[in-house]
Image (cartoon, rainbow, N blue to C red):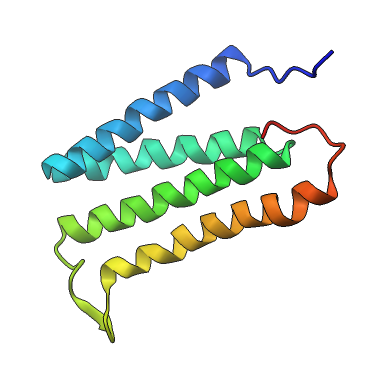
Length: 130
């Protein structure tokens, strides 16, 4: 029989609420509703951190949830830089302040790279969700 990965209902409800907050944040960004967008960063980021913490016992879940957390961080910084109009200000060379979002985006890529290239091939027999 195939192993089953169960998510407690209260965790699943939190994950679903997380999606609602994330969508409100991005809609506010798209519509340039600055106060709502900036406020929605807080619950979106906090819930993503809680989800990552709760899934820490499964490396596959932890790596993906941490990647989501740094993605939201990068996305939120980018939104703030546009809202406060410093996104196009020169940082150095051809780079602007918006490009600083590449730091957390890159961390997310490294986390997933670690999981798929290093951890997963070395732990083929361990329970995972991906």
